[in-house]
Image 1: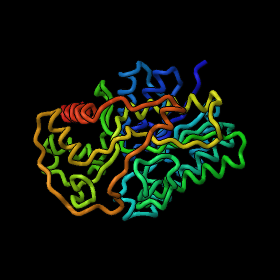
Image 2 (image 1 turned 120 degrees about the horizontal axis):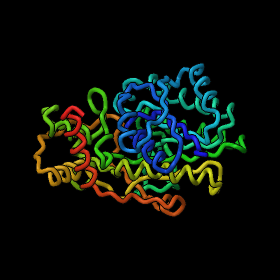
Image 3 (image 1 turned 90 degrees about the vertical axis):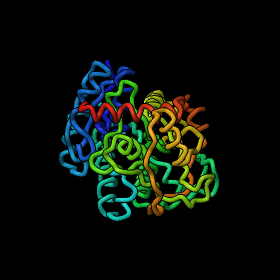
Image 4 (image 1 turned 90 degrees about the horizontal axis):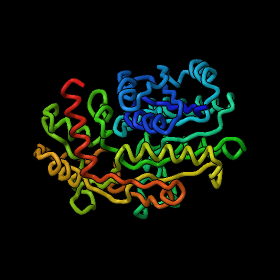
Length: 342
């Protein structure tokens, strides 16, 4: 009998790619999302890729009554992958209450209802922002977490602390927090990819929308950082590589391989790329020259963040395989699909 997995935020960018990987591994996938930053048509695209349309419920998980009803329906689930959260760094600086209310309440409701229904395996979607302004690069899991530079980042740090506190008193709960660096790219089927509603908050859709003529120019936030070319450096990884890590992490939980009931892993390539590196890769793989200009630094951003992913390679048998050129080219092909009315 197939094991059931609940994926919150499951119609979003990372959630949809992760749903594909779980379905391809034989899991019975249930998605829940409020559709605030995604489209229900993603379900049909997942079906086109996998041959299976996942179950779906549209729910705002800050509503505990509806969350309770959902978990009661799916009490036979083996575990939860929790993606559901607001994630725009800049907006979180301007609207911190909105971010704390949404992201923390979702987690609390999910954890409470998991406990009530006897669901004991959790993968939490975290972020490298929990390291704040790092003292040492590359970042390992031994780096001390710090007060992040944005309320969004702090919701991830606080969420990890909540989960860790709960695992200390619950012998049954097993959790893994995956600290993402910067996922970009699209599925090679070109049926799912990053398609934010409204003005993008991340670099890659800004690049592709500029190339498509939707944006008149690309704004680069800061060219005076202490980096080789003055632009911010990040560890970009392909979203499909990232999605596969969730399957491996969940298999570690259900096979009781974890060394403790709360583990954390960095997910990145281990290589830092500047904003200009990403632009250069895009221009090389697509043959398109981008119109860009420099703007002031964005609140909440740090100069450099890149990982040491060795722990994930050792314990999860996971490694990011796709290159920066793979990421930028697939992003552009996906954007073209969107503009052709996909």
